[in-house]
Length: 309
Image (cartoon, rainbow, N blue to C red; front, side, top):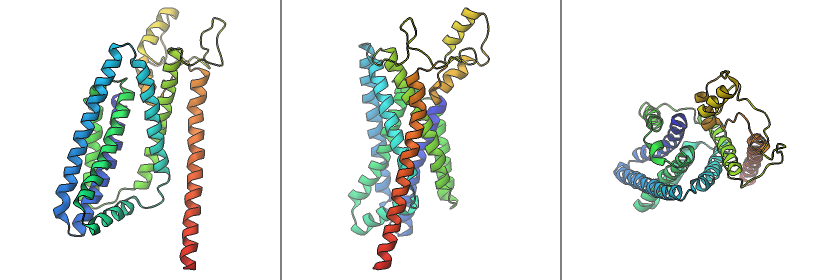
């Protein structure tokens, strides 16, 4: 969970800091530094609101746990988080326009209209969106214990690293290759999203809310393959394998549980888990290509209109 938490906070913190940093840098360039305080007021309010959402989620999740229904909320959050991650992947995949210029154009409009309220609201919504997404993802990877994810060393490490990169980016006046950053970030987000989908399907099948096209003669959900001998997905499975066979798996279950949380690894996936995992990448790849074609067609159409004009 620590590695997942660090990736999540790194990604969300860096994006928020980049956007806020661009706003502050642009205000300085157009000699409107006196508005910076409203930018930071928006950031502070968004952070408070995000913690409020986390508190509400924790209370709800605790209530569901006492009613022995936490798994129902757990797979719901997993699927919602996977959807949010996929939306982010689609957004990153269509970044043909320079990231910094697109943000600056919005702020230029706000400056020219002279609206402090718009400045505060814009900053607030940018940071709040990142905060809410972080809460959703933390709830998914921690099985509902958001406080545990927030206080983990991984979450803190992600914030520290992102803050360091953002500081270096703006203070040293050197541009990071944002295109490359977004591309590799999108790949990481896809891996996490696919893993969440698989884990959600696994919970559904454990609760018998979802069947399977392949069952054993005994009526149990069948498996595509079984790698328990190589790497169990949990230390408990490792103990069971040693007890049943007297042999030790090649790779510890401690590694398996890490890969399960990070990649959705399963040593004995069902047909549905196996198919949905790989189908997810195929579908997202197709959707990204379609979006790129539409963006390309729009750019060409705009260029033709400008030539005619």
